Image 1 (cartoon, rainbow, N blue to C red):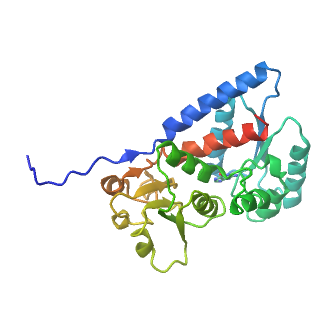
Image 2 (image 1 turned 60 degrees about the vertical axis):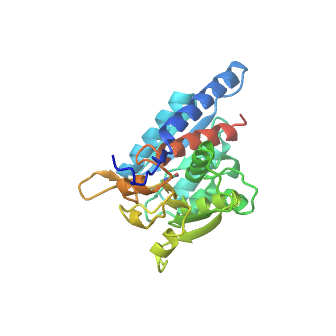
Image 3 (image 1 turned 90 degrees about the horizontal axis):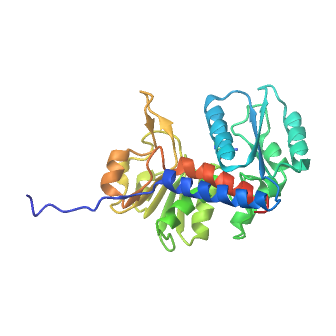
Length: 289
Ligand code: GUN
């Protein structure tokens, strides 16, 4: 036995699959109790425009999660040729529908559709994605309304494992409206010092090397070289990509991450299931549960 070899403790796994199951069970019990006391069943409408294969899978997963927990799920499939105005009209109908408490318009929308106009039309109290200006603005102003699902799921995963980001240097890679930006705001709200890296960042390595918490949400295999992460870093890989051989991968090489991180999210089974769990949570909260 080599007694001089430095022993590195095994990293902790941020197991989103396990935590999301716990959350889903709790929500299921909450809904059953609510309905037993003559409460109304929470309802979620998911609008899918066109036939993007990845979106179809996501929408199917969300539908199944609703069925499993007792949420009424309305799936609305519209043709690729749907106009912005037609989509807005459909959103208006759902805003007025008392059986629907949450509305989600699956992104990306076809290029000819003005996504922002459509998202803005969703009543803020039914905007379970948290993407419209009211909910995003409230998060920025430290008074969150409905919080975007993926960042909310990441924070739940960190807090569940006793990871406090207060005072820590958190680096977010990717500045999308869906994940990067609200993720940075969640971390800031938690007390972290936040750096946001994006396509114009000059020296990504320099920032990653100083991360105590790294959240990557780009969507390209190995976009962040896992050798750059400092030892003991908490690594959250939001991405679910396929490499050139069709194998699932995140933004970082998982084998290297496991050797250096103190905690890490597996891909799959890390952030993905938490996003769905937070969508259910946002929906029951929107229904007043
Ligand atoms: N497309 C990819 N992720 C999401 C999401 O969280 N919500 C919506 N509406 N579309 C997405």
